[in-house]
Image (cartoon, rainbow, N blue to C red; front, side):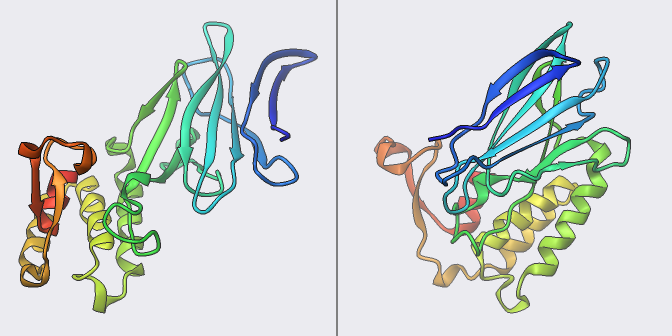
Length: 226
């Protein structure tokens, strides 16, 4: 299969070449743009995304960054969506990579039934940094929380585990997570919740020691997950 390849040039000199991923289509699906992402060096970076195809997955993101006079391809990760994650969230002239936390999708409900908090990433000095909780992005997190709340059907708000998981996490991003968790516990219908088996130390219950397995109702599973 054809694979997209990023070439970074300064004048006529190629300073970096990095391969993306095959799309599964008859043609490579990739985009590149120049943006200021890492303000600690002398110029802008190159944001490169390539799409692998498939339902809800995946766009592979790479940032070409100059570190100590040498260019390097920094792998940021694979994310759900079309790869268009570059935004200047706080209008300071520096772009961030903003998408949703893929760990919440399918965790408690179907894909379309799930909400997820923002994940905000950047690249500095050739390394990826998660800046989701940085106070500079409080307004962006509040705006995203509002979008989550506006999108839910009011009749399903307190019965949808996929929505509630993302909602509590988004509330935590703005400093209101504990109150949100208390509200979930107060409103969740425990009588109709048979619970599910989980591994108390993380991971798949099938690979978990019996002593570390327990059947938990949704609020406890959510708190453990968070």
